[in-house]
Length: 190
Image (cartoon, rainbow, N blue to C red; front, side, top):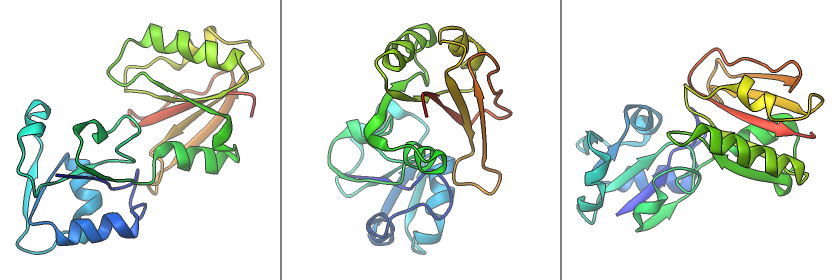
């Protein structure tokens, strides 16, 4: 099985990922991942939307599984097999904000305990890291802001890589508010 990162938005796929998709006989992915990969899927390739993520380990050995962004950043890289990286939302956010990735600490809140993620983010910021927080639509930016010093910068990064990409920077004292459910948060001194 190959786990292929399709990037976080249109045209953010690597040449290696595009080639793997073009060679695939059977492809599995979410609606969004399939849409991002569609230009590279050959006619006649079997394409299946993933309905049950619990069944992914039982896919055929020749399956290509699409993962949005990079499979190793809260993606499907845990499945094993060959992993072909993709351009992640973290890479795009830090590039847009002009922040070096060597300063980054990643905190996952997507489908996880938000209070624990906020504690982890606050701790990493206190250590001088710039946190990249993988959010879900229910994540509260104001709750994160309340756990940080008021002068700390916070950026809400929405729809990264898409034409309607939106990045708004504020502070913990006046935090930006996401307008969509597809967002990440960057917090720290940047």
